[in-house]
Length: 314
Image (cartoon, rainbow, N blue to C red):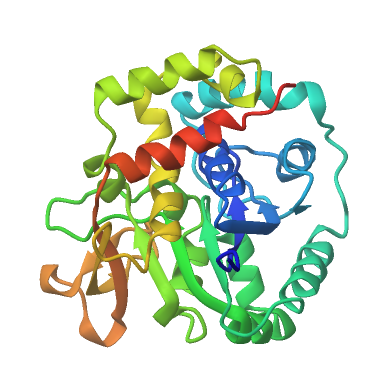
């Protein structure tokens, strides 16, 4: 029998703990090929160090350091400083801090080289951090033209579900509000975007016993994930990006993922998404597909367990 054609996925990540689990789940999925990964400033503040680490554990992909988050006007909160301290115990021993002065040029040329290898409308993009890199791609004529031709869909972990009681923007969008605005309003990208918000990830989450079983499995090994869970065992820390990766892998399966289009505006001061029925101006609104429901069941557990089973030793 002819093996099924693999889904091609490129990933942009700020390399948090949940990113690592999400990328492992995609890289080790037999139906998915991941030829390109770029890093962006956000949860992990140094894209160059993150790219060196990811290049070590994902040798089959082209891994490129991207751009530090543009909007750094806000003070770094204490929870993020602690998160980065824990993350450094995983990333620092195997990566350096040398900065590539031509980072933007390499980011574009490497992506362009990858995109040219594939047929039109055949690549899915997964965004797991602030949208700084993606906004840069949109603003580059050659890169944006290739994205227009090659991209099939985009899955973004970010933003908020636009309901009346929202008062705070999601982290990825708040970190670079201009980039979020540029990406969500881009004529090239807009109709392909599927937004997996923080609320959607919180609502569609694995149950406590299943999560306990996963932690126990990782602790039995000596790989990357075992070290990740060793320094950070909180369920909340891991629940976002793996759900987004599962959504991207199953977008065509309406039994597992349901999507609803909603008209929103992006508040440029905060990065908050506001529904037009909640006071947003229709002349500034865009229609975005929000992931509404995700079936977290046996398929999701198999998706995560495949990642754990292939966790390489370090």
